[in-house]
Image 1 (tube, rainbow, N blue to C red):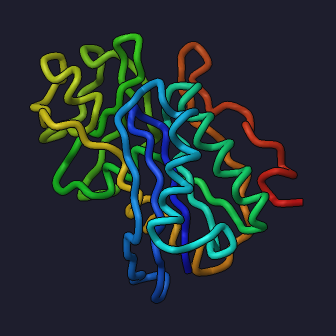
Image 2: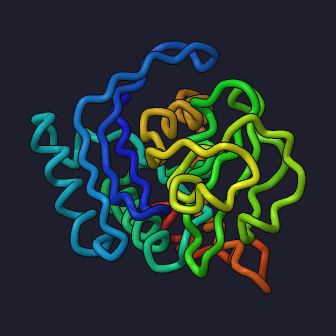
Length: 226
């Protein structure tokens, strides 16, 4: 199965083709092509060409893609919307299913020990969640680093952790980590390999005071390919 993976929940504009094989409980994943650029204002201009470049690098066309997986945030409105609308439109045009995965999980899923994953929410805030050996505890949150509750995390990782390292309640890794597109596909693998129905992509904006997932950004018809 060949999967197009996209994430624009952070300042990293990302696209990849990932080959997926094996049983759902132990999938095998291979990164066949990848594009990333750190540009918080370049999502609209760069994502489409990145998809085309990934297909060209792999010697594939749109018809060779079997499914699409998109990071659904949390993330700032404009950038996140670009990735999700693009994912739904591509899936609709190709007649393939699309699935959403929490973008923080594509960072936290690779961590060990007790980790605080934080991305940049702008306005001097972060989107964050705590992971125990790669498994998220609770729902993603948004807030100022200095106002975070006790997390008992051993360290912090992510673009937000690096940017606000001096304000984080635990030691922060200085190098910015971004959602891993192979991990994004791995987290969607049970649905992909089970041929689960296509999904409505629901973004996680979390911005206060409306700290709830927004309504579906993509009409059901677009998401379902009907």
